[in-house]
Image 1 (tube, helix red, strand yellow):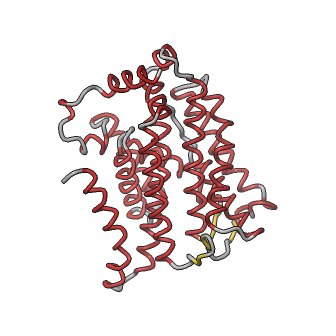
Image 2 (image 1 turned 90 degrees about the horizontal axis):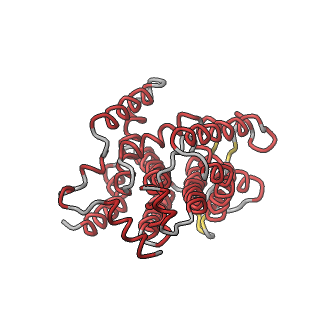
Length: 327
C-alpha cells in the first residue's frame, strides 16, 4: 500500500471512530476525550520535531509555549468571550512572540546549553501562571465558556473530537509542505552543519530564530485547542513533567519524521494513561524507554517505517544538494 493511501485510510478510520464508539455504546465520551487529547499531543510532537528533528535545536521547555497558548485562549474566552478560532490563533501568536526570548539566545547556544535555557523558560512560565492569581487564577485555574468555532457550537465531545482531528491534519500538511520549501531546506542545512550552511548562503541566525517561531506558534495553537477541549486550565497541566513527555515523544518517535512524531505521541499517551493510577510511574517508564532508544535504537519508530534505508541516498547529501541549488 502506498504512503498516500495509508494516510487516507488512517484519517478515514479516525473520522469514523465516533460512529464506531456510538455503536459499541460504552464510555463514548471518555474515549472521545482521550483520543482528542492524543490528537493535540500529536500536534505538540510535530511542532517540537520541527524544531529538534528539522533544525537540530533542543527544547526541554516546550510546555511553556503550550501553556501560553492555553492561558491566552482561556483568558480571552473568559473575559471577552472570544471563540475557539480566535483564541487558538491568539495563543499561537503569543507563543510565537515569546519564542523570540529563546530564539535569539539560540543563535549563540547549542546542545545541552540551549536545553538548559529552554528548560528554565518552561519552569518560569509555569511559575508565573501559578503566582499571577489576578490574571491566571493561580492554582484555581480558569474555567472557559462553551466552545464556539466561527459561530458553530462545538461544545459536544464529538464536535471537539473533529476539531482536534482537523487541526492535526492541517498542521501535518503545513509542516510537510514547509519541509519541501526553501525555508525547510534551510532548517535541514543548519541541522547538518551550521558552518556548511553559512558557506552556502543560509542566514543561520535568522533561520534558527524562525524555526523557534514556527515551532512555538504550532505549540501555542495546540495549547489553545486543549483549553477549549478540557474547559479548564491550571498550572499543573503544564509543569516540567509535560515538557519531558513532549521531549520523549520526539525521541521515541525518531527525530525528523512526522509519522515518527505522531507515533511517539501515541506511545507516550498510552503509557501516561496506563500508568495514571501511580504517581510518577509514567515518567519512570518513559525515562527508561528514552535510555533504551538512545543506546540501542537511535532511529526510534522512524527507523521501523523505513523499508530499505540502505538503498537510499544519504539524507545529508540530499539536503546539501538542495540548499546549494537554492543558493
